[in-house]
Image 1 (cartoon, rainbow, N blue to C red):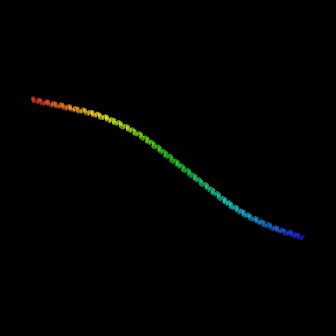
Image 2: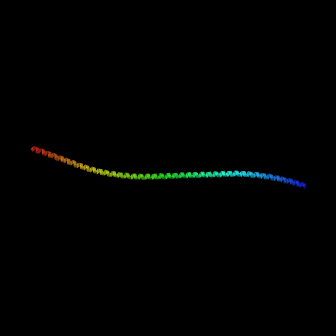
Image 3: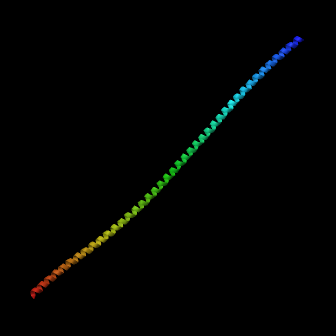
Length: 150
């Protein structure tokens, strides 16, 4: 019975040592697991920060792209407005040119009519001068004949 007891005590001591070893091993594993979990948590936090940074960067690029698109649309609208203004100005200048051409044609017609009237007046005056010269020369002849008569 004492041998059994000693064997049981020895077995109990061995089991206690084994239990202590297992507890130490489990404690070491818990420490390792906690360290691994801390490392994973840190890695997850880093990845989440990287994802957040990339999202922010992407949103910035999207904002930049939207701003550039808006800028291009504004430039296009301004260019189209300038084109429309130039076309309108060109049409106004064409109308003004047509009006000036009509005015010049009317002035040419008036000038031609005035020249024809002046030419007619000059012809009339030349004929009158010729008649007066003829008449004067006739009077001179008459006056010479009368002088001779006297």
